[in-house]
Length: 195
Image (cartoon, rainbow, N blue to C red; front, top):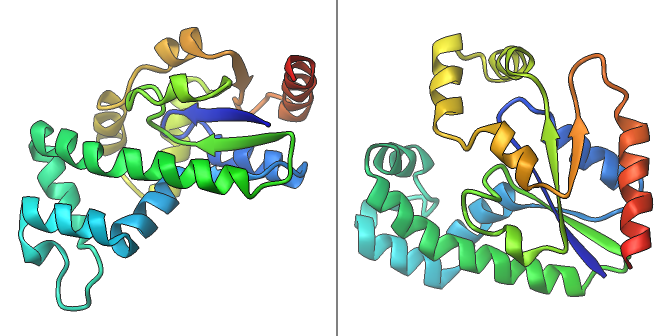
């Protein structure tokens, strides 16, 4: 089984491309969603986050206060590094276990920060979804109901898509006028040759 990383910046359409891979029958692990689950359900993670930020990070309903955590790590890069050092290894171990339970020649790991988190080396190949900047900003504004300035600020906190393109094994061009299905089929054919 090949393990394939799937990444792309805000508004690139990587979630849509992940859905296409799923429709074609390939399991896709959505790392952001699973990280949220693990931060609420994994007792070791809960203890370590509570030790870092106090019991108030898990208020009375015992669910992680995501907004409070986001406010902390947005202002404090060392806190972000500490959280990543706790969460990323747990997510990767969960993905490893999940992969073993799949019956497929490929599994995909979708993550916006695959390269930034230093996770790319854990995969047999990496697919980067790319769209031009104007398309990405427009999509993110529509999806999130956020201003151009807010989206631009978030984009500036991510690795440049041009860098991701250079480091990827495969690229899906996903501007509004692009045909993605032939690109995805080409990637699948190339991956089958690698097996």
